Image 1 (cartoon, rainbow, N blue to C red):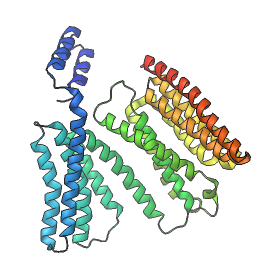
Image 2 (tube, rainbow, N blue to C red; image 1 turned 120 degrees about the horizontal axis):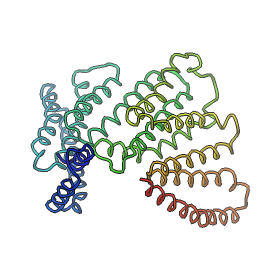
Image 3 (cartoon, rainbow, N blue to C red; image 1 turned 90 degrees about the vertical axis):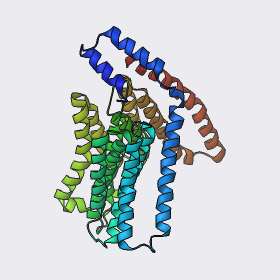
Image 4 (spheres, rainbow, N blue to C red; image 1 turned 135 degrees about the vertical axis):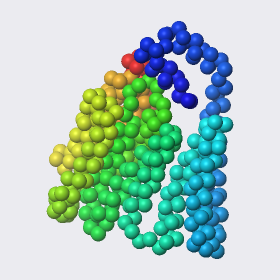
Length: 376
């Protein structure tokens, strides 16, 4: 049981273990535990080694694929998918980090195995079903193993399957505005992953979703901003012609992230509903109020994320909100101010913006981060 500290805290809060005993247990484990300073290099080495191992095996198979019979191909696919999980089970007690990496490679190999099996048997079916099968496999792996990489894969594959279904439905159309549904859903889901938990410590699947959301929320915000451009509003819309399709698409894009937030945060999920309303506003504010209002709207969203972080004691939300605010100011300068100045004046103004604005923003950011840590 590698997350013993969480359970110890839970037992102490329930009165099953008194505070003195819990303190002595923690002291004992800290004295006898291996050094944590070398833990992250070992984890990085395990992940990199597992990645190189999987890549080398796949390259070897690809080089000799044409020379193999269909029977040998299928047996090789089964061996690749099951072999990594068997190796992960073997190292389960000996090296938990290596075991987790091997199990993750096994789940990744499942996706390749599904695709190769379809090629071996010349299957011509609904292609998003392959992604669905891969997601089901990742869900089964997470249910059995309860490891963070499996949770990250599941949290990635389920949205990938929904996006694949949506793109397949709209494949025969020229409705460019339908990308707004995908952009809104991806952004809200990334934001939900990033802000799902409010406890000081994040373990297991919570840590996996937190990092997944932290990595994807800025690219998802850029995608949302691009989808909200006025050019997407030109022409006839398939979603207006088929209201049922629009209800399904927008219901999944807005409802699924909110449902996940409600399932985890209960009544504390109301900021996610506000975020959904803000996301919808992002898609219409330019057409309704003009270009300048877009930057004001993004600044409001950044300030809201900062306030959310301060209120729940989450410094990373303050940092993310400050980054979005800074990017909004820079984008406003480039699009609305720089082209109205001369070449030298625009460069001078840009330099002053970076120096003075960066200094002021950093001071405010540090103060808010300290306030958030004090509220945690």
